[in-house]
Image (cartoon, helix red, strand yellow):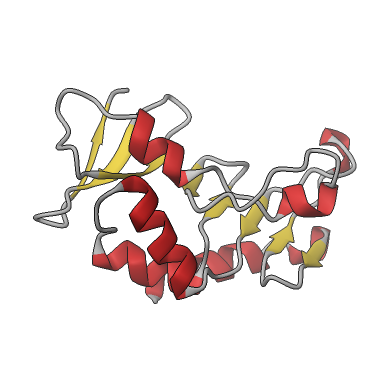
Length: 151
């Protein structure tokens, strides 16, 4: 999948400043300690199992667009350039006391799909990202076109 390969290349560019790999396939790089000892500039989250993707579809109540379904089989999202470029994923658990677990958690795509709809969106549009200015990024489930709109 080209987008994941590009993300891997971007993540790899900061590996000389700190690299951590986790058992679930998550890779984080760019440990700028001046921002805190656990701060990392890039995160590429490990893949989801097909059952986890199907569970997400069941939870949101409509199909995940095929390109994103295939993406999630390779990566559970990413956070690049200090979260300026994201694809949200499944937040499997949340334990704020476990820093290793926190490094492996993307922003939650479920909440985006359920709670972040605008008047311009169809109920089955899949919201998968947000820019720093709160502009939403979503895929129309019928046309598979990607759109952006104000929150």
